[in-house]
Length: 369
Ligand SMILES: [Zn+2]
Ligand SMILES: [Zn+2]
Image (tube, rainbow, N blue to C red):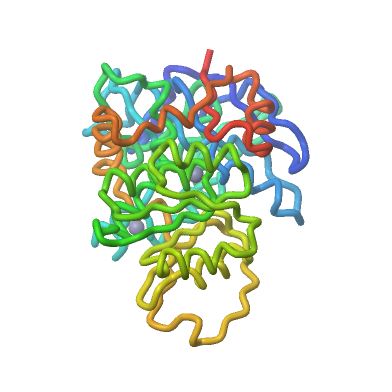
């Protein structure tokens, strides 16, 4: 049974043009489906995926509300919701179906419906969508939340209930970017105390990986980035060494001085960095890849001697298990992600985007009025 939400209209940042600004508008919320929840958003982190639509080129973007690192308070629940209640504090993450083979095996980030449920903004066929002042439907199912808004409709599945005493405004980024970086280390690469790991690119994802590598006791953690300030931050957050990504000798240093790395992550999505990352691995090493841009790699099969490459989504994390773990590590001082966050009033969303692209801010968080 669908029900009308108790809040009929809300303010949301709508993107209508690939090269245009986010514009905050009044939008009409749709009915709540049986599994849906209405969340008053406290804050929403800005993740790189919220901005990639701008690079996609081609056809015009359909008007969409982005935002997929929301945190807030549940105001209302659909008729079939049993696990989340009004008043619960929640961190919103990605959505999955629950019934495909990947989901049944506890590998939700590889859900067969991942793309439709998360990264079109319009959800599965027949999804109920918000409408603008002209009655036109707008994408409001981005990662089943579209949380660049004062209210968002999420689902029971992609909401993680957290303790009410926690600083809700800070927690949104745990739902995607930080989960992705930390999950790649803690769930997939799992560095041992006698192993080394190099992280190319120290944005939010890379820095989360460095903190997680430190928390996991990795033997040697190396950061590579072209920005001196980011290298400083990487050292502060747990890297043992940091190198300039523009230095042509990086691969030789990693393969020579460090004897080749056991594990590597490329968070830059750049072909040149991936090539260096592969060259820096020792035999048997593993490289984790992220990002959606096509790579232009020129490899001989022997370059992959005993080595493996893997593309990882959402750190292979199950949000209901992983986000509480990150909160615990943060409380213990082992995952100080608050150092990456800079808060912006919601109205300054375009400044937040600019600062994120310039590299001035690692993780912008938009705080709702
Ligand atoms: Zn699934
Ligand atoms: Zn994201």
